[in-house]
Amino acid sequence: MLLASYFASYRVQRQLLIDSALEANRAYAAKLAAVTETTLGNALQQLAYSASQCALHPDDDQLVQAEIDRLQQQSNLFNSTLRVDAQGVVRTLSPAPLQHLAGTQASSPAALEALRERRTLVSTPFLSVANNLLVIVSQPIFDANGHYQGYIGGSLYLRERNLLNSLLGTHFYQNGSYLYVVDRNRRLLFHPDSQRVGTLVGDNTLLDELPGLLQGTRRLVNSQGVEMLAGFATVPSTGWAIVSQQPLQQTVAPLRQLVLNVVAISAPLALLGCLLLYWLTQVIAHPLRQLATVARGTGGQQPTERIHQVRAWYAEAAELKRALLFGLNLLQERIGRLNHDAQTDPLTGLFNRRGLQQTLRLLQAEKRGFSVVVLDIDHFKQVNDSHGHDIGDLVLQRLAGLMRGTCREGDLLCRTGGEEFLMLLPGAALEVATAIAGHLRLNVEYTPIEPVGGITISLGVASWQPLAGDDPADTLRRADHALYRAKQQGRNRVCIDHPA
Image 1 (spheres, rainbow, N blue to C red):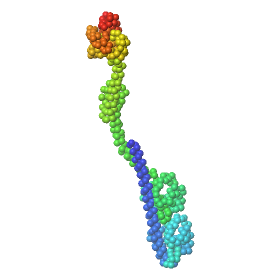
Image 2: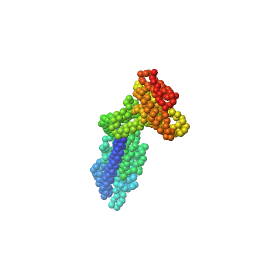
Image 3: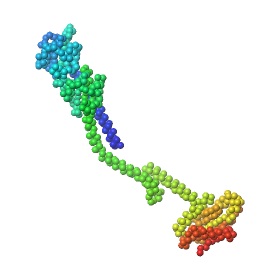
Image 4: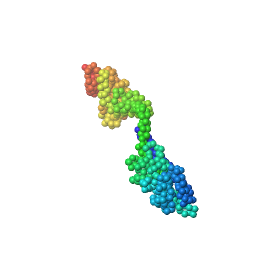
């Protein structure tokens, strides 16, 4: 963002400088065009007054000479002044070095045009016989009867010093800008390089458009291949175009230094801001990293404990923490439910063989002794055959309920087969297990179960002690053998497997 702001600021300031330079050049050219127009107007007024004075005594060459001398000397506007009669003969001239031309025939394009037009005229710039580039400003002379008596004119030598030349040559900008003036024929009337004055300008896109424009601005490439910012204006009475222009590179050069100064000043602040921003991002990201580590399952602590240790100090992290805890609790709940379902008999709600095996491994690892009671419903097949499997399932559920009512807290009740059940009694001696088995047998025998009426069970009891070195699975087999003996001895009884 900082670099983007630098770039945007540079582009905006650069365009502002360009627009300002273009407008300044246009305004300057327009001002010079207006001043040039005023200067030419003043020159015509002076010539008009002198023409009126000459009309009073058109044949008195001494009086006319005095008038044109006064006209030439009263200001530095004209390089020379002259009076030409109606036949085109030069009657008088000023200054004195030119008086030897008196009596000659005026044959310059400006003289011929003035004699032909017989009106106020600013001639097209032309090269004289002496190779001077000049402009003739003239006023016709008419006597009291309105007869044409010739004209009085003043010459402006564009390559020499005069008021107009001084006006255009005094340039106040010091930024590489310069000024030039061209006429309608694309001839240079003024240029900082005096050697180019009087030459014709070649290809130039601006000059191609000038005939239809009064003033404006353009970006262009000059004859030296330099990109310029130009402002131009036209002198209305002559059609001269005044162009003020300056190099683009010099215009925008101060901006580069300005940008470097701004960068130098703002760089330490920007660096400090970046460091603060980096620190802030680390502070913000720290709770997220901790939560991500927990989500990946890395680390030694329990996930829930580690999540609780995360300091979620802003709302988004707190919501993530809450969601992660909720998801973890939900996952643990579902895992616990799945684990319970995997270890539980769906009909009776008692543990199955998988749950039994897990508990046996735990007791063996803890080296904790236990007793086991294995039981079986007597003649259960007859119950299913006589009353159906639904009633058989009901009998199994009722037996599970009686087992729950008989066992101690912490005992494990299992359904290991169709009508086979098991009671795992941790820490119980063989005598305690035998008493529990006997109590259960009596409860079952004397508890009616409709519509069956009643059932009986046979039970086998065995015990396991960690110091004996037996496998817990052998204890279960011994309990099964005791159950088998109870079946052989007539059922509805408890048999004990006494350790050797």
